[in-house]
Length: 83
Image (cartoon, rainbow, N blue to C red; front, side, top):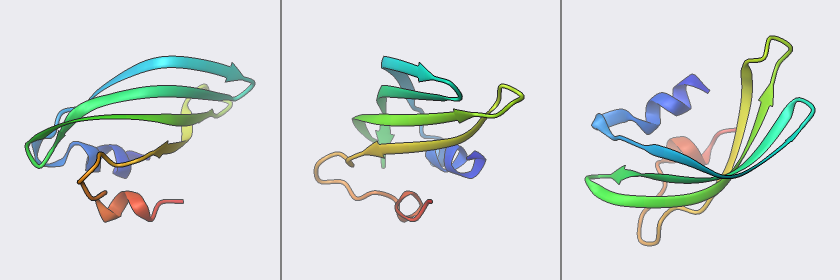
C-alpha cells in the first residue's frame, strides 16, 4: 500500500480525494471517490470505487481500487500489475 501511495505522488504530483459515497460493513468499507490531480503536468479528474479492509488494530491493511484512466492517458504500468 505504501508503495502505491508514494508512486501516486512522484514527481511532485498532488492529489485531492473526495468521498462521494461510503458504505461500511464489518471490516470493509466501499467508497465512491473523486480524485483530482495532475499527470505529466495536465489536470486530471478520476472517479472510481475503492474497497478498504481494516485489521483488528483499526488500521487500513488492504485497498482495492477500480477506475478507468482518463481518456487519452495511459495508466502507469505500476498500477496495472498490482494484486
